[in-house]
Image (cartoon, rainbow, N blue to C red; front, side, top):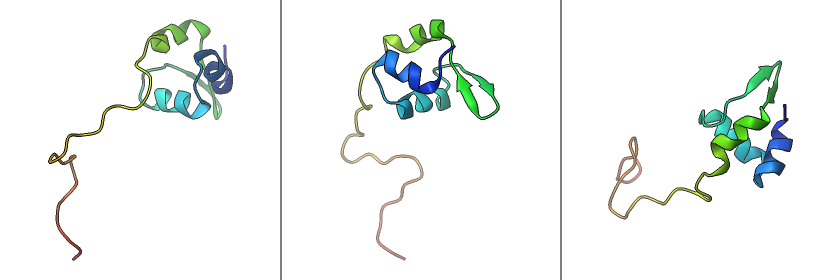
Length: 72
């Protein structure tokens, strides 16, 4: 069992990125109190992920919930 920090070191990412993978339900955890414990074998689930951020939306497209226009 690994802590978030230990998992981050093994994956070569920040602890915040590991927490985001947990929040996105890409990386399963076992919660004990307020701590997340990660099985070393579960790191294989995210080992071959794409690095970096997803590409930005193309110009002229809006994300859901965003509106164009000025101040009200």
